Length: 387
Image (cartoon, rainbow, N blue to C red; front, side, top):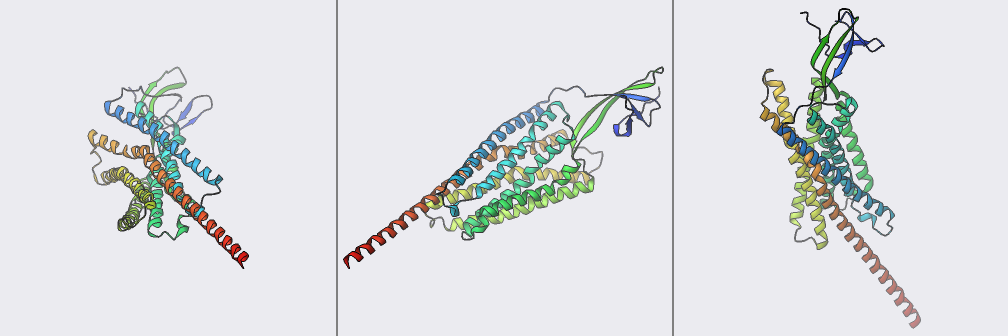
């Protein structure tokens, strides 16, 4: 029986214009019928992963959307309020707003991943594949940048309270836009190379000697992968690891260590109005801790995969248990994006308490000043009448 060439990629064939293709290894025109394989029954491990994905998606979308809505309402109220003291407004709420957006986008990458695990292959095309990779990678880089900026904001509020420009609305918005732009540049290779890659599983050939057309049925699947060349992948991984993890980690440790030491020294000196400030700093530190707890195992697994690809033998394959552990490690970032909104909400509450205290103090000072001025004018009038 004569062997039939395999059509691994339709890019090697040219369309004839009437529903058939002309390929180099086939003397006749061929009619290609592409089909997906049957969906297999879910394994218990895969079912567990799918359930966790679904929970993270529902909780992450609803939680981050609710915090986003609350913060937007607060910002709109601030715009319409004429009495509040603008100098005492804490613009760290803008960092929380940006972090909610990041976690919301990361949660949006879950539905395609859920369906990919259920049916076993990708079926959304290259465009959605690019969006899936970018949205999933946003939390890996942008969250780190924003948490670092928020730690810097708390550091300036506690250790350098008189340098107000670094905590102004203009500076905060400029920092957020700049950090998003840098993250987009770092993620550009992912956006360029990611695609839905076709994998041929089986090919059936139906040949009729009397027919001028050969019929071929191709059983194939698609996998959403980054498809980067090796040198681009190494550059992308090393740059995102250094700029998106190591450098922010060192900066966050520095800012928070100085902040904790400052708060520890002044615990007994700070007045009661300083309690929200301490809680704000504590929640900021907790957000950073949760982030690194969720993402450090992920980066360890990525570095391990790179090490195995460079130094292990080609025929050596990882065990199913190890692959499942790595898969569970990759679940941690999604768990973090689904639960971070709780800390965002607590931090927002403390920021509002601090804002209300500052506003009350400002109004009290205005009242006292007006009273003193009124008493002064009244005394001057009495003195004039007496004289």
